[in-house]
Length: 123
Figure 1 (spheres, helix red, strand yellow):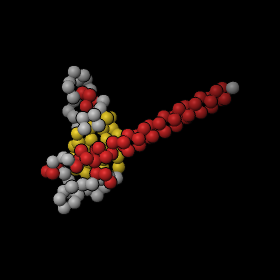
Figure 2 (tube, helix red, strand yellow):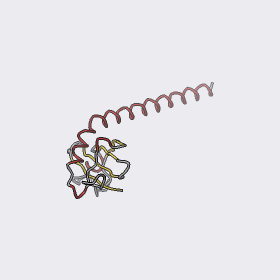
Figure 3 (cartoon, helix red, strand yellow):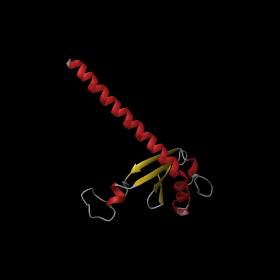
Figure 4 (cartoon, helix red, strand yellow):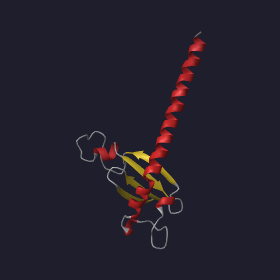
């Protein structure tokens, strides 16, 4: 009887994990497809001096970026988790960002979905 209860508990935990991972992946795909065009436009509008050298004029085609993923919070914002009263706390820990990465130039564009702004960096 104990083995049956453990097996049922294991199956229930497995079911919850599978449903959660499917929900998260589907939600991420929907958000990336919904905001990819806006993110590409915002990344293309960044000043030319900050654009990585992808083409001769320094422009990168962000619509064809290899990878797009959703991130919560921007680790580049200099705020610690105990600074609740800081004006940038939400930007650091709560706001959604769309991160587009290109392959050849290893350029990354972090698009703030709520503020409609972008930041381009090279790694």
